[in-house]
Length: 363
Ligand SMILES: NC(=O)c1ccc[n+]([C@@H]2O[C@H](COP(=O)([O-])OP(=O)(O)OC[C@H]3O[C@@H](n4cnc5c(N)ncnc54)[C@H](O)[C@@H]3O)[C@@H](O)[C@H]2O)c1
Ligand SMILES: O=C(O)C(=O)C[C@]1(C(=O)O)C=C[C@@H](O)C=C1
Image 1 (cartoon, protein in one colour):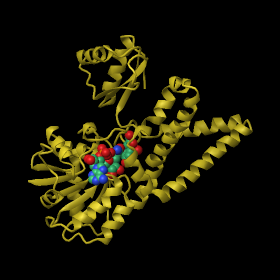
Image 2 (cartoon, helix red, strand yellow):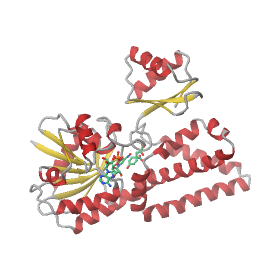
Image 3 (spheres, helix red, strand yellow):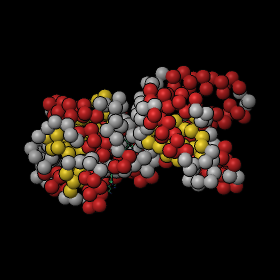
């Protein structure tokens, strides 16, 4: 029996737990400092056993997943290094940055245990165990950043275990990881937040901004709703990389301003054409990099009754919804329903069915 202990059973830790729980030969323990959270993990049936004792979870484990915010990863690793871990125990993490934890792991003595940094390139703007899903990592890349002194068979053991996530494992140097993920994940989060805050300030003097915000604004800003504390830790941890990326971003924007000042239409066309060409080469709807779920947006004139109608219509057609959310909190104004699906096919079936029923559906 392989015992897996997960510290921090939130979106990512909970999704991993769901990938492992119930699989032959695996037992999953969830740890939280908070007794209510530990009780919730059990109640939601995400783990086999839950505890508030770090020592109990750590010392029972063959494999430890650290799934807490980036700022807590290194303190957790230090605490683990002082415990009586099983010989050969593999410690891994899921943090969105990899270089500083890899450096820390190199400087502390882990006895007979091994550390291999990890980062599943899948997620969402939601957080907590409530948002966990066993499908989260399917088809996504899962980065591992082993130090050269980690034996190959230890790396293979972790890779084999991670097959339960149905993700594609990829080995990357930790600094290269932070450079690339800074650009394709951390920078977009900063831009989305800055953009939403810019528009929110205009909206203070004219609420029409919010009402007219349509597909383009929604597409580029979903990730602005991500957890502020998770992102505080990521950005501060990857500060050097971020400052350089933001400098480059400022230059890009300054060049756009120049094109406008010069009325350089050809320059603008070239920019869009070049961007479109690169974007068309991105892997099709691979989960994780910005698009985590297959989302449709449906305009709803009023809310009461409409959710029931939509879920019934989709249910009658055997189309499975993974989530449904009203993106307008007031009941008396028109709103938008966000419908999430687990795969492209179900999303497209839902699009066809709802359009046929007269709903206004967009991506
Ligand atoms: N959200 C994403 O899209 C995503 C994707 C890949 C990796 N990650 C990384 O995964 C890790 C967890 O992120 P998440 O999105 O699952 O967040 P989450 O908020 O859903 O879960 C975080 C978990 O850590 C616990 N926690 C929070 N603060 C803590 C503290 N101070 N001490 C101990 N435990 C604490 C919470 O109770 C929760 O169980 C982070 O390191 C993040 O960088 C996130
Ligand atoms: O899809 C999202 O909501 C995400 O933010 C997922 C995302 C990303 O930027 O792609 C965010 C952080 C991660 O560390 C990995 C994946």
